[in-house]
Image (tube, rainbow, N blue to C red; front, top):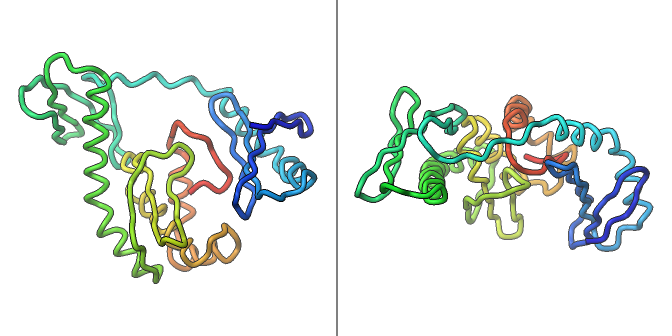
Length: 240
């Protein structure tokens, strides 16, 4: 990937079939990547990066100050999040199919075979997360389609490193990040509404945010709440 020097920064440049410039600062080392429309002049790229120098520096410093997160082992006593609440994981050896049962107060009981590996236990929890999110989304999407006044042809769930959600306007298809099941429900609703509004307006411009004000007046509160949660991914200026 081509890297160029812009001011005091090393910046990776990716030219692709998009309409606007996109800046990403990657954790943990503060690597900078700019995706640009194919025919964007070099000077326009330089101006774009320089104008965001303070933002880049802010996030690079943030990454430097963060301690690396300990790798989860999916063992008893760990805390795992569901809908914004921390749950204590408790493992139980069993001979049946691996599964998870949510108990109150705030316990996730994981039933797995004796001698299960970390990867196997992670897979069990991820599958449970996916089922929970898949069960919640139909009613939520239906509700927000009525509010926003649009209809999607398809929606799906996938693990994404750089986006909370995406929208394919031509196909009228939205994708939601599996990580959202760990966040408060209001954060999930914000991302759903955000992606649906893109069916009215593709860009994050004044019209887009005006529509967000109309359909979800308190969206800023939910976005800030989402920003305060941690996610092992790049932080982007316009991330949902």
